Figure 1 (tube, helix red, strand yellow):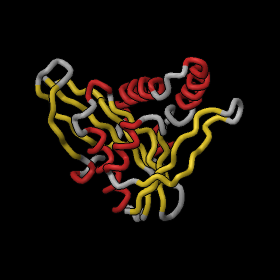
Figure 2 (cartoon, one colour; figure 1 turned 180 degrees about the horizontal axis):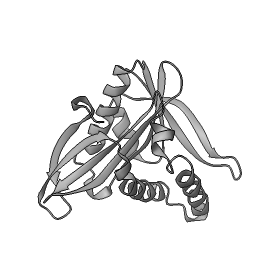
Figure 3 (spheres, helix red, strand yellow; figure 1 turned 30 degrees about the horizontal axis):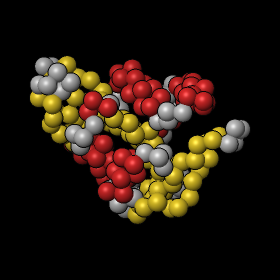
Figure 4 (tube, one colour; figure 1 turned 90 degrees about the vertical axis):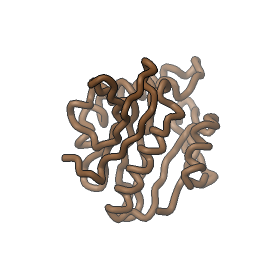
Length: 190
């Protein structure tokens, strides 16, 4: 059940140019197809190195058959949560953004799976998703958040820095064999 504090709203143009209302709310099972679509499209845009595309395809297969097969169990277990941003235009609602939070310790949680439909970038949706997540994290006793991102994505790095996240100067290797794709670690005190 979504409570008023689990929702935030922004307005912006829809894909057709008409005004649409964008709401951020807690995930519901009926969102699954839209969430999966945003995730698949987002993950496959994460790295444009064709030589290693097979690694991302395998990662996608694993994620879709494990944590995305049951979002409620993987992300909404005690200490975690998952939200969607939906755009409603002319009575039709579409998932345009997603974000998850997973518990790492009593006082720290990890921001996971933040993706926004590219046609909706620069509308404040990612910021609203992050605000909702951070508010919920504070209300649930977390003192800090961590996340990883592509260090080559100046847009993502700049976005997280604008929200007060600081690079820990560490990277996390996504694959050992072959040694490929170091994700940059960020953290924020709440």
